[in-house]
Each structure stands twice: as C-alpha cells, then as structure tokens.
Amino acid sequence: MNEALKTIITRRSIRKYVDQPISEDQVQWMLRAAMNAPSAGNEQPWEFLVITNRDKLKKVPEFHPYSKMLPGAALAILVVADPSKVKYEEELRQLWIQDCSAATQNILLAAHSLGLGAVWLAVYPDSLRLKGIRELFNIPEEMVPFSIVSLGYPVGTKLAEDHYDETRIHREVW
Ligand SMILES: Cc1cc2nc3c(=O)[nH]c(=O)nc-3n(C[C@H](O)[C@H](O)[C@H](O)COP(=O)(O)O)c2cc1C
Image (cartoon, protein in one colour):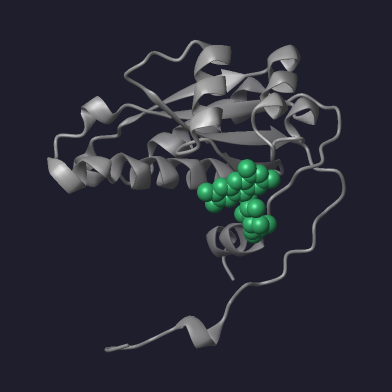
C-alpha cells in the first residue's frame, strides 16, 4: 500500500487530544489541501476560519450537541461556503455542498498525514448550529458555515479497522 492509500484507509475520527499546539506550518498544509479539493466548475466556493480561541471553542457545545471534544482541541477550522461563487442555476446551485465536503475531507486527510487527529462536525444544514456559529464568529449573512474540523495531537493511536465491504459493490448494472 502506498502512502496516499495508507493515509486514506487508516484515517479515523479522533476526538481526544493532548495539550499540544499545532504549528502554523501544519495549518497551512491543511488549508492548502482543502483548497486543492475538486469543485464543480472549479468555482472553489469556500473560505476558511482558523479558530484557536479556547473560550469560543468552549461555547460551541452550547448549541452543537456533538461537539464536546472542541474545548479540548488545539484548534478548529471552520469551512465556510460562499454560494454566490456558484454560477450554476436551479438544482445545481447546491453543488457547493459537495465542494465543501471535498474540502473538509481533504483537511481530515492532510491532518492524518501530518500525525494529527481530526473529526468532521456538521454545521449545515442544522439551523440551530448555523445560527450559533454565525453569531459566535461573525459570519456574514451571504456565507454559509458548512463544517467544523476539530484538530489536535491524538491521545494514543486509534486502531483503524478497514471498512471495505464487498457487498456494497455493483458492476455494470445494479
Ligand atoms: C457530514 C458528517 C458530519 C459529522 N458530524 C459529526 C459530529 O457532529 N460530531 C462528531 O463527533 N462526529 C461527526 N462526524 C464523524 C462521524 O461520526 C465519523 O466519520 C463516523 O462515525 C465514522 O468514523 P471514522 O471517521 O472514524 O471512520 C461527522 C461525519 C460526517 C461525514
């Protein structure tokens, strides 16, 4: 297995971190990975907010029930969608969701390859979380807070069990 495949297959959500900061260099690599995700029409409809403020991270679980790890994270990256960048019409206007998902996944993979632990926290489309994040971080109205990636050096190593499942594969026709 080569390094890229190993990174993809051994990545797991990490929710417990040691108290150690993440370097600016590592943050840059994760953001660069995010910005190199594929996007429909190459519109790259994303922006990123890097959050290290512990007081703010502590406030997120007040409105996001599955974010209890955030106060213990070294930092978080908020992936914010800019739907105005999407030039497609009607149903395809929603393609920013896939684009921001790809960017979020790239952050997770970059984090894992750097020896960091990460977990994807959904914000969009939960209205309570959207409101809470908008208010806490002053997100402009036209932007959509999409996901939070919680990051830190992992406590121990999580055994990665391969999720490969032959029964989910169909070939040629269903
Ligand atoms: C769209 C999405 C939303 C998620 N939201 C949360 C969340 O709010 N809190 C959390 O702890 N994990 C969240 N996760 C992580 C999943 O629980 C995790 O990916 C799943 O259990 C599989 O585990 P693995 O990532 O270790 O393979 C989310 C994952 C995705 C893809």
